[in-house]
View 1 (cartoon, rainbow, N blue to C red):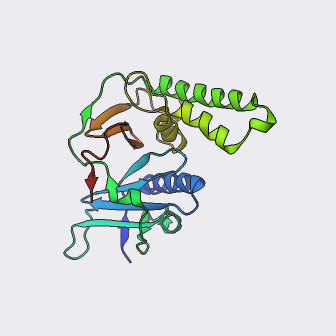
View 2 (tube, rainbow, N blue to C red):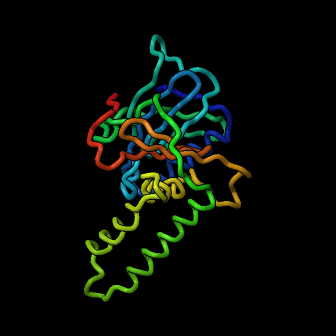
Length: 228
């Protein structure tokens, strides 16, 4: 079994927290792992948000496994979480699983360029809070006979599909960043914490110091997709 040595206990704790949040939304979640050099990328897709979450983890030493120079495998998120040893700052890679369709289509590694118009972290948090409050208010106002799953989903899609200003980034991507611990509460965030919006082909990427949320831009079909 391959054992990865993480940079420190904090990296192990952050990885465990990310996996636990994914499992909160999908108990059967799978994640795709890619390790090259001293970086491990963990990809997951919480179904509630319809986005791709990417958590970068620092390794203590370059990944090596015989003649292989890169680890690329899809595994159970639950089994991976169980194998995280925070005190030793290690994680054992479990057996591969048949990945879900999203695991075969990842954002490109290169070619990202900055996109203008993104508001700051405080405004992003306020956007999510306002959307949550609106959803709660509108659903509570529904008469009992209309409070169906289909109607709740319709209201949710309408609210979360709105974009942040003129950026094209759906509000659900910001909600996902907050829910997965990438956009942390103001009391936990560092002063001047950078948040940026990038694009590459059909993809938009909301990047914070704790991870990224990638989402396909509407109306661009399957252009510029990296299948690996």
